[in-house]
Image (cartoon, rainbow, N blue to C red; front, side, top):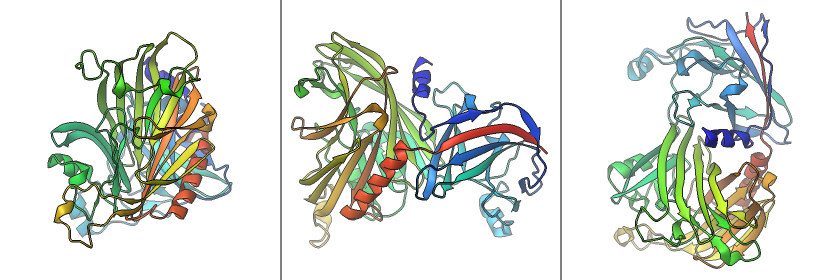
Length: 454
């Protein structure tokens, strides 16, 4: 519970400001109706986009204690966008194919996908999560309608679970755009996709790694080895000496057995439809100078090619106060260009060997190097991160910052490659990363209003 409270004290994911007004008011007017579902209570949520460009499918997470009424479950709330046109009655064929819980005709708005995520696994939801389109420099209203409704289906656009890969148990989390997993407990690996799809579950049920996936879907494109991979967290134990960088996987007790070495515990805490989360506990991490443990929440989002990590150190014991947190990403294979600014770094590589394990079965024209590939990582600007490159452990790019008073940290990972259906060119990828980082650091303002009754 202490860990979750510490995470709550961080700037909640994409949530900048919540105003809580618990009183009630009677409001006549255009209320949402779906079939014979006519709710009489609702909570108004206003979202303000402070940026000067339109934002598509903005993630919004509202902590449980910030709503005037929190004693409801999945089937007792409907998240409705009143600016959207309601759906029509489904056909008989649709009902026969999907069942009687399909959404019927709607008036005065459209129900949008949402989820109630139980982050600490105590049986009570901790965050209400949904995504919304926000025009530039405007405020938009969303309603949370209260009342039991058994109808409404939200197809899964993300997935998270623990599964096998070459007899090795790993956590996976993915959107249809990109996927991520931890072959090593502290360094993220990435699945790049050639078409929109969810693929990790199929790989695990066949006990295959991402390097053996159907080529038309995509594949593992990253050599992690001793590097930070697509993203990881370490500690600089002496800020005057970058060689004092400590990482969980390379403690003095590495290779001496699980009792003595760093350990990892993986927990899927949310599995779609629009956000999937893996919790990673790093335990028993000891160096010659300190003892550390941390809890990280990795998330994938519907329609997004990035993953976020929100975490906190649950143990931080060191014999000196001169310590910094380091979030790192590997120097991409065949790196030819690095760009860093405002707490972010992009590493570009070209003519990279395709690490698909069955490449010997490909024809000569198929078995070609990947023309271009890139990784990007960003730490929230509130931490004041500073960039530094290190040659050790295969070459990595770091974003360093002092340990915050709440011991928390947040970072974001983005991938791109020339064979993908998006993020497939250097110029467009750079522009995408710049926009994503700006959105990450300027979440929408969220105001939660009174309970309204008609």
